[in-house]
Amino acid sequence: MKAIVTVTGKDTVGIIAGVCTELANLEVNILDINQTVMDGFFVMNMLVDLSTSTKSYDLVRDSLDAKGVQMGLTIRIQREDIFNAMHRI
Amino acid sequence: MLRQNEIMQTLDMIDHQHLDIRTITMGISLRDCCGSDPKVTARKIYDKITRCAEKLVPTGEAIERELGIPIVNKRISVTPISMVAESCDTEDYVPFAVAMDQAAAACGVNLIGGFSALVHKGMTMGDRRLILSIPDALAATGNVCSSVNVATTRAGINMDAVTLMGEIIRQTAEKSPEGEGRACMKLVVFANAVEDNPFMAGAFHGVGEPECEINVGVSGPGVVYHALQSVKGEPFDVVAETIKKTAFRITRMGQLVAQEAARRLGVPYGIVDLSLAPTPAKGDSVARILEEIGVDVCGTHGTTAALAMLNDAVKKGGVMASNHVGGLSGAFIPVSEDEGMIAAAKQGTLTLDKLEAMTCVCSVGLDMIAIPGDTSASTISAIIADEAAIGMVNNKTTAVRVIPAIGRTVGDELEFGGLFGSAPVMPVHDKSAERFVARGGRIPAPLHSLKN
Image 1 (cartoon, chains in turn blue, green):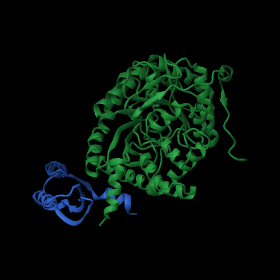
Image 2 (cartoon, each protein chain N blue to C red):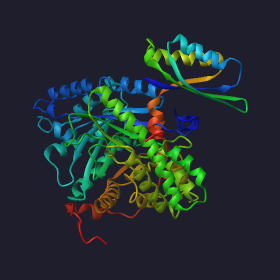
Image 3 (spheres, rainbow over the protein chains, first blue to last red):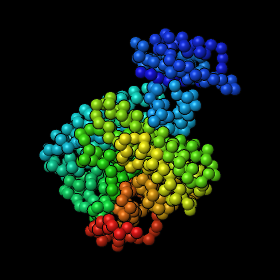
Image 4 (cartoon, rainbow over the protein chains, first blue to last red):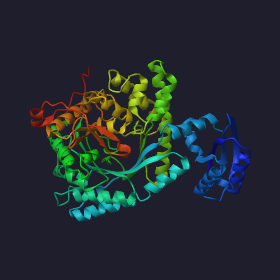
């Protein structure tokens, strides 16, 4: 299953490292990263592949959620399908 | 890969514009539950519903987590109980409503629809028994919704049923355990009722439907309102186009969720109902869309035209996004459930008469309207007849869900809570329609040609 991870929050040192390490621990493969900083606000979208992971979707979701709380960011994961449904014909 | 602005646009719709899937409704046929012993039939009803819908709520919640979009309600609709119970040796249909209520509670759904009868041309014994049981059934249950179809374009209006329903609505109001006529929130009278409607209180599983299916209702007034911010002052062509594009996006969500839910539950996917269903939350209002289109307050002159355009554009955009569109599909105008409508009704700009005009051009009808507690049964019947006439002549679904606020009068306000919102008691005309209603009989079906 492919999913989009969205990370938003105040820009600080080590956001990408922190999120990528967490994904690596969860055995989730990162396929693409898109990242910008606007007026000190950090926005990152990642396309990830969960088929490499032995962890359940709910565990991945909860772990990212907890990591977000720890780093003072909002991290969420949603299946890619919802975005494709809305923006691709 | 998807562009960043596309991803952020979707997240913004969910986070700030109240985009959600309003309901996943499982339609279940109860035609195999008929029998002569009412106790056995009630048990069969309970067993079949709980068997079919056992995984409905957990499946809905799993989809919600994976897609990251709220699915507000999980609900059930069943075969009109008048048909299921008709062969039972009993006149009291309340135990069947209780069985539905218990099954709904066991499955964890918040509403179950189908305590219904279709009597547009006449009543069978079962239909009459069901209708007479409605006040007690709605008083004895918390989650059961009831609907009665009293007219169709093909059959005309069954005025005997209209007269009876005026009395039933009054009795239901008087017997409301919570007082103030609140049980009437769960009772709707239809013309041209549809068989695959996922929205309550009017959902039932029609006779032409399969054994079990999934129907999905989408929402999104907030998203449309937000989209219109970018076309201020532009001509109507641009406004309609903007609404169409937005409706398309919203409906694609519904289509995805419907297919996913049907696949996981192992039942066919029926339809997506692409309705704009408001909530009392600020920024999720159909009235505010109409005001954004250009009328100062919803209900003033121009409102009907604005609503007609909105309703049509929603359908045109949505119909491209789903392979099966059905249900009611259009803009809903339930007064108590729409923050802008509540405000407009409170200040007196939005009246019952204007709402009636609005129902000529949008989906459904006079919905969630509190009327004075002393409104007579014949006046309620006359309101139903007016709405049914609009539906019959215009070949569309119309409905009446009014709440006679027992002990309350114009100027008071009823607080329903949650998605049902709050309703200011609206005035009705004080001149009687008693003689009109007392005639009974049937209003013949209209011509289907010579339309001018």
